[in-house]
Image 1 (tube, rainbow, N blue to C red):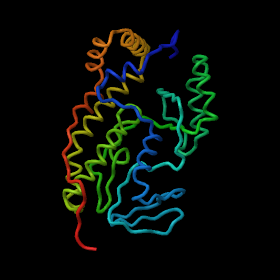
Image 2 (tube, rainbow, N blue to C red):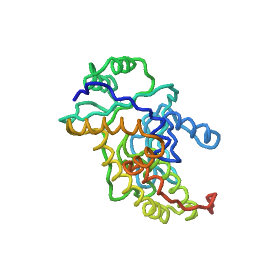
Image 3 (cartoon, rainbow, N blue to C red):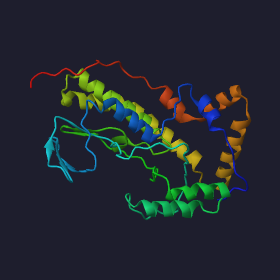
Image 4 (cartoon, rainbow, N blue to C red):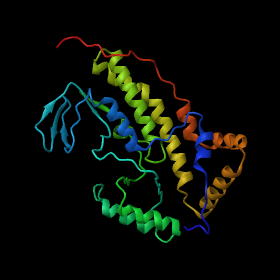
Length: 280
């Protein structure tokens, strides 16, 4: 569904009033921050992939020989190509049927994106022209991952690997950071005993995950409308929010932005500052 004219919005205004604690950090920049903070204390393995993990924490790789670890935490790994860009574009669209592509077939993904948006507007075509040059490209469906448990034996999951609320709409990165903090804290509190820590971690995260899932479903319905009326309402709402003074804008956004309220209402325990274990 093509709009007669583009809708322009100052995202800075929305971000400043949607949450008093809102900070936007791009995924590759966040990866670089974590890598720089931990590279002296953590072993990173690049240019390899995990092929199998057993419940007793034996890990098999495509290139390296098998290794056994005390614990295995499944999470979105750090990409070896960490780069910065000055501008980003986010494209969201609905498809009447499931798209035919492989998650590693980037040319096919770019082809699908062009097919959905080419000819919409000269500015959009200019952004699409950057697809052949961009070093940072991410394409995925907006899907929720629901599992009865995130742990098995010495293996547990964090973030999208275990409880993805929905890419682009559900605050996946924020939830993953909270999950990593809670998991580390529960391991420290349990003295490294994963049989106590993993269930405690899942209990502590359950409410946060449910709230994030609900917020993601609401955001997806708003940001990717299913009808012309929905598209029109979204466009008019964005124009109204951009035109309002700061006070009314803040009040309106806090009433209508569920995800901001979810993350601002999260409370976290203060955990021990270090993990103390006994034995070799």
